[in-house]
Image (cartoon, rainbow, N blue to C red; front, top):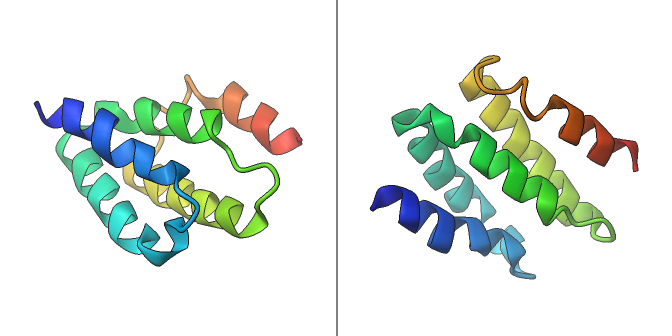
Length: 92
C-alpha cells in the first residue's frame, strides 16, 4: 500500500509548476520512503528522468538536489541500472 501511495501521490507532485514552494518537504518524504525501502531508488530516478524539466532551470536545480540526496542515501546500491539513463539526460 505504501508503494502505491509513493507512485501515485508523491511522485506526480514533481510535475506541478509551483514545486519550489514545497520541494523541501516533498524531498524529505521521498528520503523517508527510500530509508524504508531502498529498492524504490530506481523508481524515483526513472520517474525524475522521465519528467526532467528541460526548459525550466530552477526546477532542474531542484531535481538535481533531490538526486544528490538520493545518491547519498543509496551509496552505490541500485544505481548501476540507471547510470546510462542518467548520463544520457545530463548530456542534453
